Image: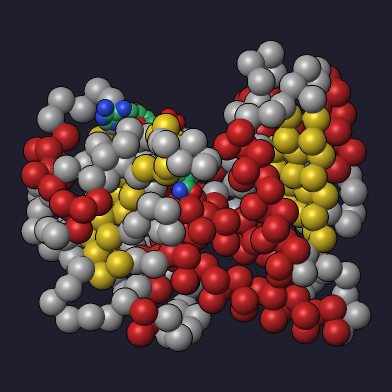
Amino acid sequence: MKLYATLHNSHNMLYFCPQMTKILDGKALALTLRSKVKEEVAVLREAGHRAPHLAAILVGQDGASMTYVNSKEKDCQYVGFESSVYRLSADTTEKDLLSKIEAINTDKNVDGLIVQLPVPKHIDATKITESINPDIDVDGFHTLNVGKLTIDEDTYISATPFGVIMLLEEYGIETRGKHCVVIGRSNIVGRPMSILMSQGGRDSTVTVCHRHTHDIREFTKTADIVIVAVGIPEFLKASMVKEGATIIDVGITRVDADNKRGYVLKGDVEYASVKEKCSAITPVPGGVGPMTRYGLLHNTLKSYKKKLNL
Ligand code: NAD
């Protein structure tokens, strides 16, 4: 099944340009989708319902994690969700973190709970993920939700693969019968991505490549769709892709730069050269990242509606 029937077409004008590469503008699409959520929440509040509520736990001071959590908080504010962020010190014990999770798990007014990864080394990340109530596991990392995704049952699809699927659907990229190469096999991106692309609704023939694949080019050269999530800046070169392919760049790496922030964000694709050869491509930033942020809002709203039987 399709994850979504097309919600709207208002952003179509942003990309359609014959003979040119489609820029899959995740920023614009996420903005449209976020606005829809905002409208929906306003209607629900008008009808007397409480606001959807997302809780986030951040342990430690990792720069990228702090940025991600701040953005999630901002997104919640924008759409009218309540958001609680628990910023815990890096020396928080696993036991204390588990108690915090348990308290949130049993709070009837919380619809979504995420623990920002990575957690410090003295904490077992798997134990933490498994301790989250699967009903509010809006990151979709709990094994129960991963299992459901694997057998194509309704679940929370983790935000990044969900965002990519939405991007492909909304931009009308044909996936049926296409050869899709997913580079990377992590539990949060590559693995779920490969499963989703092979499932009914997408119907792609999927090849998964990873660090032990001998000659990745051999696979990517025949791919109609390449989804790359390795975390190596400019990993995918023009010489590795087929003319007219669709390229989805999930990678985000902070690369030192002589600017105010001290870094620039780089994707896993050598954008300038690959863009000349493919038919559609996501930019970094402004591609998959904003869609991931939307994915979390989507999942939280889904949990909220389920709780309130809406
Ligand atoms: P990860 O480190 O968990 O996994 C990386 C994967 O890449 C592994 O499966 C590994 O086998 C593969 N790999 C590593 N080197 C390789 C090589 N030389 N050739 C082929 N495969 C190789 O990373 P992750 O969590 O999946 O994230 C990947 C990238 O995506 C990172 O840059 C991360 O920041 C980014 N990311 C972006 C978003 C977003 O919203 N855009 C969300 C999650 C992750």
